[in-house]
Length: 237
Ligand code: CA
Image (cartoon, rainbow, N blue to C red):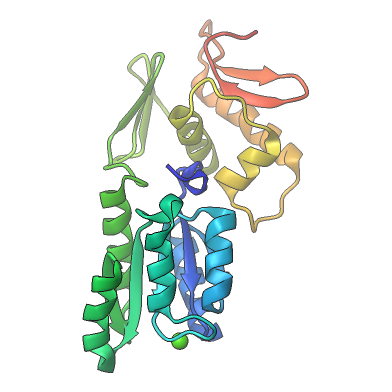
């Protein structure tokens, strides 16, 4: 699993040289909870793929420097990215090309102009298939259950109500139990790399999370690791 998926918020690389379309894609993807990186040409796309290990690439066909097809070929050639999900974006008149794109190794394609709903549906379907977004299911840790489909959280059978940030924070911890994360890592993964908030914001939400999940006389399962960060853990030392 690439590092990009650590947050439970999959990272989508948008490769598109039309700035207006790239902006619109970013806006809509972020609204749906995805993290987004942008590349304006083929070479930049390959560089960013190596640097950021995205969970999915939305790849325009017609690009400066390297065509989408060439980018896709190189993605498939490299061992680390051989299974990276790719959706090719083509102009409507290029249906023949789309078929070629699929032959080159794209997992899916969509023709311009497309509706955002159609695009988002494909992105989600492909991410589910690739395992970056697990089917809506249950996460369990110790006596806590998290239903990702209904967004219900419970501890020892008792319903727990969390704000959206605390929910995402807990989901992230539940996906990586016992692992210690720094405030910066939590910010990158739970809030997103492009959002600039103070590291101590994390402390505020950790406090709220604790308040939400730790009932009277219940074990505090959020471990503070001095000078390091936080972990979901039943051991406090
Ligand atoms: Ca283009």
